[in-house]
Amino acid sequence: MKAIGIDIGTTTISGVVVEVDERRHSTVIEAKTIQNGSFIRTSNEWERIQDAEKIVKKSRQMLDDFLDEYPEVEKIGLTGQMHGIVYIDKEGTCVSPLYTWQDARGSLCEENNGSLTEEIQQTCNVQVASGYGIVTHIYNLRHHLIPDTAVLDPRLTISLPSSMTADTGMDALTHAMEAFLNLFASRSVQNASIEAVCENFHALPEVWRDGTHLAARQEMLHASYLAGFAFTNNFVGYVHAIAHAVGALYHIPHGRANAVLLPAVLREYGSCIAPKLAVLADALSLGGDTVSEKAERMIAAIEAMRDSFDIPSTLPHLSPNDYTEIARRALKEANPTYPVPQIWDSEKIFSVLRRVQS
Image (cartoon, rainbow, N blue to C red; front, side, top):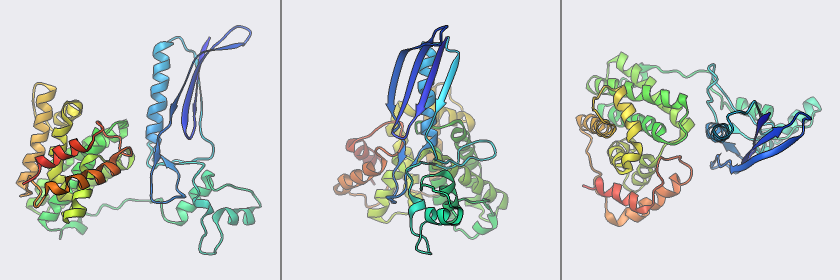
């Protein structure tokens, strides 16, 4: 009898295939270890969180590789990190990062000048470490980091000017697009992204023409919510990384920078994202016979919608003298944090900037 064992550690993921004989003696047939590589960098030194979806993807890939090689496996065992915590919704979908056992928020001094772990120890006479899931959960509750409800009220957006409606709507579209195109997109991320893109294309032109259209405003809020869910779980990409750098240097509104850069970045990716663009094109019924034709129609549809909002296709005042600094900032943000479909260097960033230079 053959069995598979997988251990999900904080830094590595290890797997083993064993052969167990009639006397229950086991022999290792194959063993492998890969880097976990899922830590999410934040500005807080005490925060130690990981991308749970990425961990699942890597573990599942290891399991699939073993099963392809040893289809006669009868049993599978799985072990994981102790004490960490991750939040899921009613459908079992992950909606937060993994707060690992190394997370130190429970050791931070609170308003009473003591830490949460000290308070629990004094109150309950129980020794706890900062990384225990219950400690993390109590801290998150106290600091209002766990929302009970998301309120999407379209009446709050009616007074938003048409230009800002277009900019922010294109930003939401970019959120959904980049989360969908990135590697490791889970099924829930893919579904949310596709729905967000479709709702965006349907509702954004309506609210741009008529800001008082409540039904369209509601649909845009939902699209933005879905896109937020998608990129919270699978990040953004080079569009955002470049837009952040350009916005900081030239004071261009973030959504507008994304609107200009999105088609340029998609074209620079080339054929590696064509199959996924084709999926979106099919969802929008854009037609096309081949994958490449569908991908081109998807990009063209984005450009056509952007142009209909009187958003320019180029960035004003963009200077080649700033290319190196823009690339430095964008690459520092994106690599290796974002699971982009293709790793770029400065030359690829320069190529995108040349595409959008007026």
